[in-house]
Amino acid sequence: AQKITQTQPGMFVQEKEAVTLDCTYDTSDQSYGLFWYKQPSSGEMIFLIYQGSYDEQNATEGRYSLNFQKARKSANLVISASQLGDSAMYFCAMREDTGRRALTFGSGTRLQVQP
Amino acid sequence: DADVTQTPRNRITKTGKRIMLECSQTKGHDRMYWYRQDPGLGLRLIYYSFDVKDINKGEISDGYSVSRQAQAKFSLSLESAIPNQTALYFCATSETTGGYPYEQYFGPGTRLTVT
Image (cartoon, rainbow over all chains, first blue to last red; front, side, top):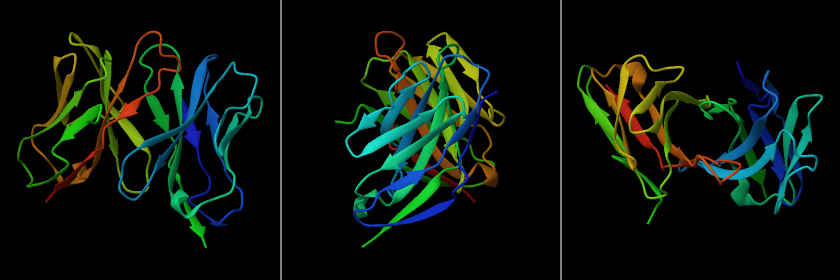
């Protein structure tokens, strides 16, 4: 069974600073994907970034980067130059590459960006 | 227009009532999923479907049923609603081939309250 752990229920960051949101995972699968989603107060789930288990380079998407350390089973999200609009819940999720390909989510981190 | 739509967006119902949540997609994806989100938790898988004739239970299917009326439509039913089914419900779709990393596309969510 897959498991995602996000140990930071809440985080504060000053506007324009960088912040790292932690995510560790557990799986017996060899091939899997790791995702980060943003959920603003309006409730929708917004896809941010993806990392495949065989990808050697860390994924980047604009101000988002994923610090993937396979041996440590961690997939931390780094947001550079935080903006007020980044205030939201952030979820780490894992998906197996075979079978049902459903997502297993962590419990989330609430990020608040302060001016 | 949104690729994945959910109706209703908000619903208040009473204990014991039957309620159906509907999901439609225009992305042409084969795979569809229903997730549930409780406050302070990540999303959990209720049911998933690979095509019209292939429907499978997720981790928390008790008290729910689904119907895949067509490739584009996947409905979730609560036969006899109870208060602990109060949650935010998400539908998601995913393609089967070609679209690696098989990202899941989420609908806007249905906020259901059972009184």
